[in-house]
Image 1 (spheres, one colour):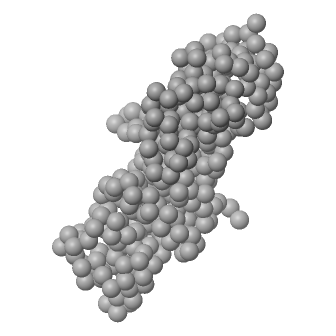
Image 2: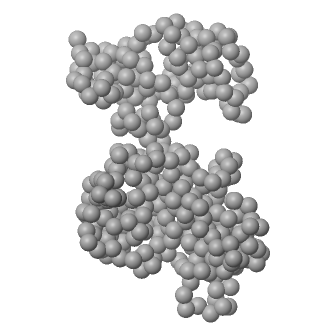
Image 3: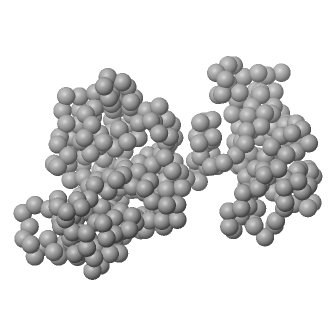
Length: 358
């Protein structure tokens, strides 16, 4: 079976400025895919091109093996069987919830629209709220209505454009998991655009990290965190500190505070200068640790505390620790290094110059 959606080497321009360059992507039926990247990376432009709101200058877009976009041709959005959930919800304040949900339905009787509306409200957990108006709903409830409206015509694919950005952090996290559950239970295909990696991790089966109009890596959340393919992704995903070192073996890096050995072998000449990524979970506060560090900052996160630790040569590292281990600023702690997934990049990945070797 072919892909439900396929983008082949598409290029998008806005006011003659290149926004998306030579981008290819496929989405299979039932997949939940996230386009993740910083503001201005082109992710929303890609979503608008899929929806039919943005023409493409090159390449083509296929939906169920049928061409819907190419240079000079754009099938209108209403003929694509695509549902869209917008960042600002785009609900009509003069219509009640039931009327909002049914707005995109055509040629159905009032009884059928009522049945569909009730079904959609049950799916999104808002049963019995069909007669309420938008101003009577919370932000999270409005988002659910927007999702119900997108689901009502039974589209082939759902597009979500930064759908949780107007919500507080707690509601955003809860809705992320709820939306994933709804889409999975309905066996729907979805594409989420977001700059928030936590949303992408919560919803996506796979995540495409984008920057400057290109997809840099498509992978699972686990692999993006532990096996980033370049310096940008390593820096963008998760937290961590880069420390300079020198490759002494294919799987070992010499730093100013010792040799660090990991599980990954690098095909680089011995002596290559690298930047080694150390994540907060790589630095373990341990009374038997060989290194000493000073607590210089701490951020309480409920179940955990994120510490900034300074070691002897003034290098600062991050460490995440269960919050019942409570160390005040200025305290000295022992640490050990446990970078099981060692991530290192030659310095040329940062400076553009040839790697330095002995």
